[in-house]
Length: 270
Image 1 (cartoon, rainbow, N blue to C red):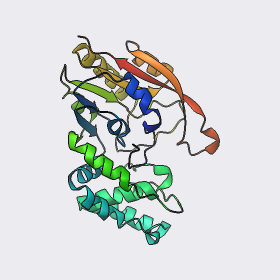
Image 2: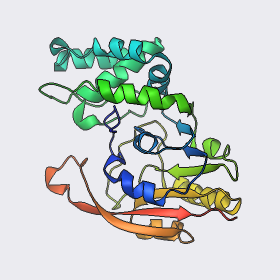
Image 3: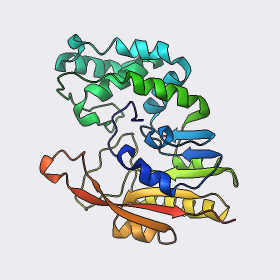
Image 4: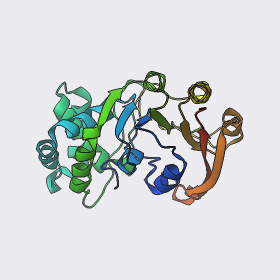
């Protein structure tokens, strides 16, 4: 099942490859849940799904708890009248200023589906600033939301950093899948942050070290990233599967070729 949110870097297109490498366990922990593509297409008993973007976790929690009621509320924003640049920027301003969590959750979906390329981008001040997308008729993902709601009854959603999420992993029970913001393919590549803070090389190394440490305690950890020399060094002790994927999110349509990707498994020691 596709996620109900558009998401740069979504694992939906390679979810079968991810599933092939994921070890069995009772609970899957995802410290970078994103749109939830792996969660939606695996079958663990339970899930601990984390992200440091509070707006993302907010919409997931409302959909989890309210289901159809929340879906119908979100539908009210998907009208022909609301598919305009003027209305989009009015709603974007409201999203950045409202204290109403339910309204904010519904507007997050509206902005995600009406904004440019499905980007989830914030300014340094923490304001959502993705521009209008100019789509003829933005898709309202009702069936995807219904599926998410049903599957989410087996999940716990938490807003936190990857270290806090992974610290809850238990040997003999949990498996971790980490899909962090990817290492840049070149020094000049620009990273579009989907939350405030950023994720640099220091964080990449901390994540790799933590993954190795959890594996030594008997908790397997699978990571995905770009296939770069830095990533190969950081994941040197892991079992690496390398392959090419199609790039879809570059703003330059001539620069959407195939790029190298890795899945790195730190197997849990028995």
